[in-house]
Image (cartoon, rainbow, N blue to C red; front, top):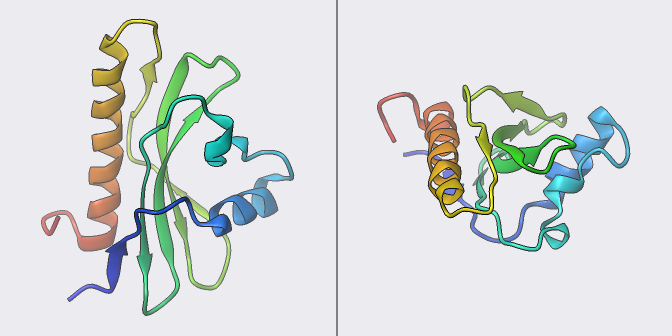
Length: 123
C-alpha cells in the first residue's frame, strides 16, 4: 500500500518556499491562490512516511493568455524538482472553449503525477 495521499487543502507553503529558494525571491507568485480572480484547478499529494510532496499547479508566461500546468516534486531532504508531463499548454480566451482545453491540460498533468507516484499502470 502506498503512503501517498491526496491533500486537497490550500497548497503547502513548502512549494512556494522551495521554489523561491531555487529560482529566486518573487519568482513564484503563481503559487499564491490569493492572486487569482478565478479559482484554478490544482492537485497535491503528500507522503506521510517520508514528508515528500507533489503538486500540479497552473503556470503562465508574461502573456496571461498562455497557460499550462506544471508538476512539482518536493523530495524529503529539500529542493524542488520540475517533472515534465509533456505539453499541457492551452490558451485562455473569453470563450468557454478554453475551460475544456484547461481541463484537458490539467487531466494530462494529473495523470503524469499519478504515474510518477504509483507507476504507469497503477493509477
